[in-house]
Length: 282
Length: 346
Image (cartoon, rainbow over all chains, first blue to last red; front, side, top):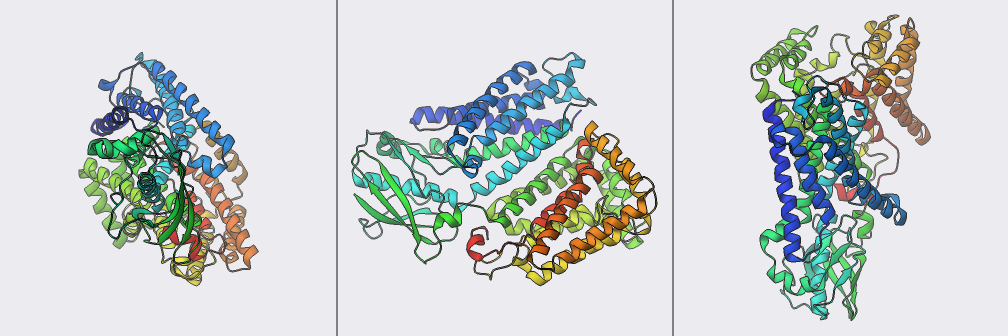
């Protein structure tokens, strides 16, 4: 036994919740036509289900080898995306790239499934979770520690960014620009990309502009425009139709599901859970 | 169509002017202006983390690691309570009795107490990383660290000569408290400081704390138990059990170097630690050299003497003192800290 069963079950429940939220984000994005990263949310669904199965054998779905292959593919995918941004950005921007943690998550998943697979091979169980690894030493424990430290460090960094003025600024700027865009009378059916050069500046959506009447509110304070997606690098992406119609039509649940903060919370929960799993594997 | 808009900083409430323009194809662009109060450009302030915030996040990461380590299966066994009770040995009665009592409580309620311990440590890490909770979390971490230093580490063995810088003196957890003090957020309008640790407590007190820390380590290096011919050798070679091959090989190599040279090694270590302790008072280049030396010594102690806290052998409750000493040292790196470059993290 790698830990008290109730503790493993608790983490498994957290992972199932992350899987449900991530699946909900995919559906919400499809319904509302808003831009999210389907590869990230899709990978989160897979990771969460796989981790829940690893934590609690009754939730096992696929053999370890299959999961290892799946996450090898996602590792290559996110590695490619990070490498692509590395070509065009400096190191700081690349480190801020939101694909880096997913690359680490995927690599950690490959490591865990390979390690658990090798350790449980002697027990004859192809789908054994951590519970079947009692007293079995894994290979390359140093790598497990390094990955755990990276995951926890990223969780701390995520928490910082989640609560930083820069994030509020990104959301506020997106709201401001959407409001201004409507005021400018641009075509509602025309997709547009808004580059916010100062998206890291701390700001909320308490907005005034030269044409604003006293007391007039262009957008609800602090609310991200429903059509925009703010990436950690500070880029705001939006689509025209959503600007015109999405703002009014988007349901609160959809808005909540698609909020970057919820995605960060999922990433933090997953990072801490994964670090826990790596530590108890050692 | 073009214009300017005024947005207000969420955390600082600073008015920021943003120039924007929209063209007929539906593209809106915006560029940063300047803070209305004449402060530096917002991107320069908010776009990067300052040195103190990085160190705070490092501390948060270590707390998170502590919390995760506390959830290991070993911590849910009687062995954990026995480990706590074992720190009472050789301590004065006034220190030892409360430790024994606390270990008894833990032994009787293992699952509950250990889960509470782990949760507290995870929350401390989360709180330090979550900006609105930074100050309460740092304050709570000081209280928690002092409590654990007493009830969990027996004050690091400093009262009975059992402490050694190689094995983790003065007790890893008290360094968390020291870091919480040195990294305490301060008013952005506070005067400039020569290094991060000087901002909350002032340069003189910060240097005094450095002197006490590294000076005490130098003293512990040459106490009777640590300067015997085989003292350091036995300490290092005893760490190899259960470690991965490369780390066990490092232990064996280091133990071979230290064999029958305990006194000489202790003196060399004490000289290095003394140089670090006093170096911070020297000119800028000397202070930098002292900090670099401190980081190097901490790294060597952490890897070769503490086996990265024994985490890889299982059953460790924290990464031990080497990692924390390195973080403390980085907080003393002389690099003209100004309010403008630090204000956002306060």
